[in-house]
Image (cartoon, rainbow, N blue to C red; front, side, top):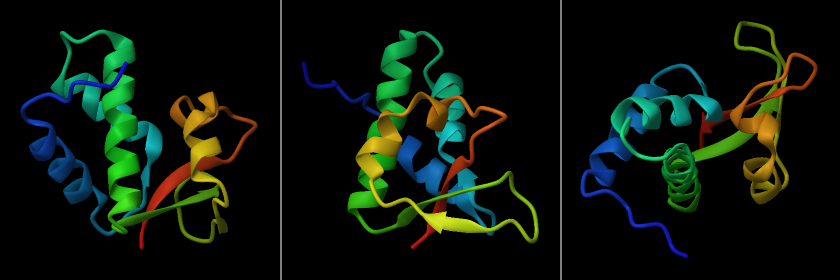
Length: 107
């Protein structure tokens, strides 16, 4: 069943990209934003909205996905070769201490 996007979806997406700023943003942070914007929606809907935003930004060429250690100077990052697989991985949305984080980087 396709996701019915909320009426303010474009405004939400604009805020996500504006939060990108000078720093890479963790993909998981988009879900956090969705939790704040849509607290009355089911959890699965908020996650689906977050994933939709990330996929839109990828398709629009506004971001790329990279994988690496927690943010900070000197942390190596590598391009994510399969964005679909990364977005289906639970660790992308709920960072694990023993796995690299998936970040949104400017393209």
